[in-house]
Length: 86
Image 1 (cartoon, one colour):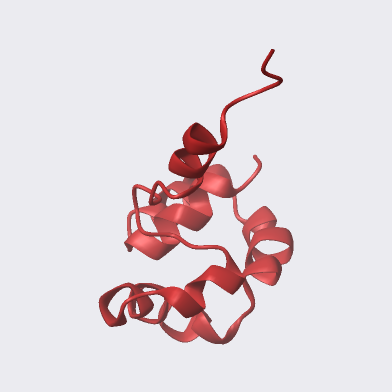
Image 2 (cartoon, rainbow, N blue to C red):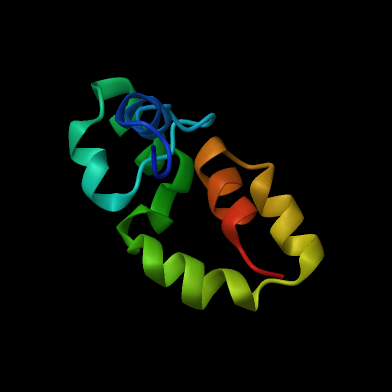
């Protein structure tokens, strides 16, 4: 009798790329050169700010309209905006 998903289906699920190419902090080290440029180019001067600070400190300060406008600026900002709790 099986308990939970099989190992094959679990590994397939875990290896699916994010639709926008986003990677958690540690996994960004494995990114291709093109993927590695998405964050710095998309965030501009905010690229020096750690992801956790963006998500927990800066984004909650934005009004809904500002957050919506921010998500249209780049793919990286879109990923952060989709993650923000309103």
